[in-house]
Structure formats: C-alpha cells, structure tokens
Length: 98
Image (tube, rainbow, N blue to C red):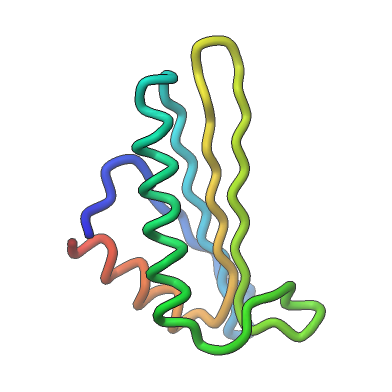
C-alpha cells in the first residue's frame, strides 16, 4: 500500500514506545480518499498488532486515534498511532514501501 495523503512523523519516548502522527488537510472531494487511506492504515496495524489495542496507560499494547476537523472548504484528518517503537517503525516502513 502506498500512502498518498498521510505522511507520518515519529517520536520516541526513550523507553521503547513511539507515537506516529499523520495529518492531511484536503478539500471535500478528497475526504473519502483520506478516510479510506486512514482505515487501510488501521487495518494494517490490526493485522500486525503486537498485542491488545487500548490506551497504553490502561494496559493496551498499542492504540490509534483518528480525528477529523472541518474548517470552511478544508477538512483535516489526523491519524495517531502509539505502541512499541519497533512495531510502529516496521509498520510505517512497510506502508511507505507500498
């Protein structure tokens, strides 16, 4: 899968957990494509899940969040993944490789 809209920035907490965030701001005609891309990323994360999904503070091994915000003609879609550093880096590398 090649990502066309979502480009991830990563941050490492220094203890083996990472956060990957992608933001795409698009016009209304492209919102369905961005939503489909976000869902495909979530499906890939589920398939390669390192353990149960849920808030990391509550015992989850990984988690994800998708937010949408409309501002006039533009919609911003934000996808955030959190989990073990090696898992997230491998997932994003696989997505970027297509």
